[in-house]
Length: 258
Image (cartoon, rainbow, N blue to C red; front, side):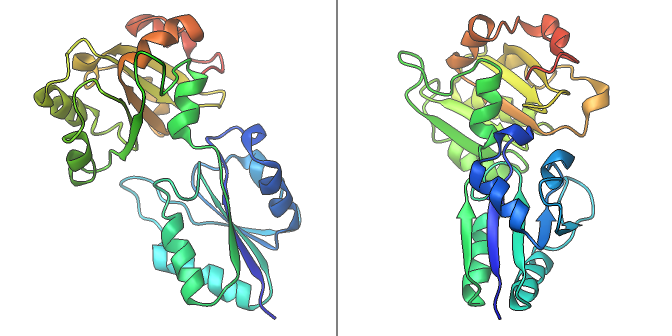
C-alpha cells in the first residue's frame, strides 16, 4: 500500500499564516519531516505524527538532500501520510522542486501545498510593498548565499528599475550592496534588513544602500532568518508601518513587529 507525500509551505514563521490546507495535512500526517525555522507551534498541529528534524542552516552540518528524498519515499511506500514541512513556500529557494522530482521518479503520489513566502511577507509586515505604482512595477528574488547565485541576476537589472529581495543574504549583504553600487545604483537607494519576520523576535533596519553592509544588527539574533530589500519602495515603511530610519529602528526589537 502506497502512502502520500505533501510538500507543505509553513510560511515565514507565524503559525497563523499557515493555509487551511496545510493545517489539515498536518492533522492527518503520520510523519512530519520539518525544516530548521519551522515554529514549534506548527508542529503541534500534527499530534499523531512522528516528527523528524531535517533542516539545513548555513555553515552547519546538515542531513543530505538525498537522505531526505529517501525518507519520504520509504515512508510513503510503507503506506504513511508524509508531510515535508518547509519554510516559506516549497518551491521558492527551498529545494521543493528537487523533492518533487525525486518523488515523481519513484512513482510516489504527492502534492504541493503552497505557503506564504518571506520574500513577500517580510517586506509587507514591515510596511514595504514589493511593488508600488510609480516606484516599482516588478521585483526580483535571489538567494544571497553565494555570489555565483545572485551576480548574474542582479548584474542584469537596470539600476532602480525593480525591487530587489535577497533571501539568505545577511552574511553577504556588503557584497550585494557593492555589486549594485558598481552596477550604477544610487548610494541613497533605500534599503532594509528584516529579521525573524512575523515572530516576536522580529527586527527591522532601514537606511541607504551604501550603509547596508555596515548596518548593526542585534547580537542576540544572529541565527534569525533575514531578508534584504533594496529599492525605492523601502521609503514607504516609515508611513505604512511607522518604521523610522536607521538607528531608531532598533526600537522595534522586542515589540513583535517585523
